[in-house]
Image 1 (cartoon, rainbow, N blue to C red):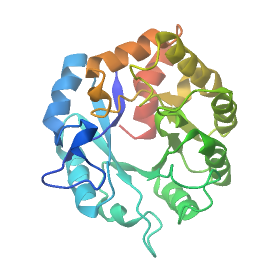
Image 2: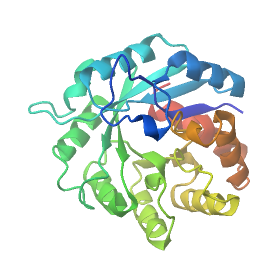
Image 3: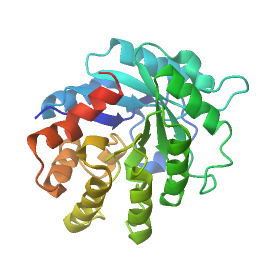
Length: 267
């Protein structure tokens, strides 16, 4: 089975500090392409998409350069940082041919996303540039994401972590996930849903709800490495997801594990 890991992070906090990084988070100070590459090769993954961990231009330049040069980290998604006169944000100045998306990390904003500076401008500009807009949000913002996607039907959107992350997958999340999935240009990554606090049964329920809402053709596998490595070895993330998924046709499995990521991120 071909695998594309559509959600990893890379950093070196000694060279490029991350404002949110703290030792007590239990994360490595360095998560480098060569570290990830060894894991990808060991598990048979053929490519990865790196998502910027913070929002400095220097970090964006480094990540874009990695995606240009590395044989396995093939694409970069830069973090949106509002900037006057720059609808794609200030990090977009670092974009190169292997930059295929911009992520808006917005969980601190209103449920309808109305107070995210420049978000509609970002969506419009990304659509014109052929870039994916990724959204990192909390479950209460799923309906806002759906409305954003409807306002910009020519833009491709991808929800990080199924719009759930570590939150409880309650009836409200399922309802709003279905609402979000009604926008045909909205997709979702399975990143961030594997956690030791989640039983196999709960993970089956989460992935079943996502499949019911989006279908396999609009879901993408992502490991969230090295965040996930705090509690789950790299190879075990994919194994837990595979075990929790219902039986898929060959075409659906191909889409979820590799094909959709290849299509959206132009691999």
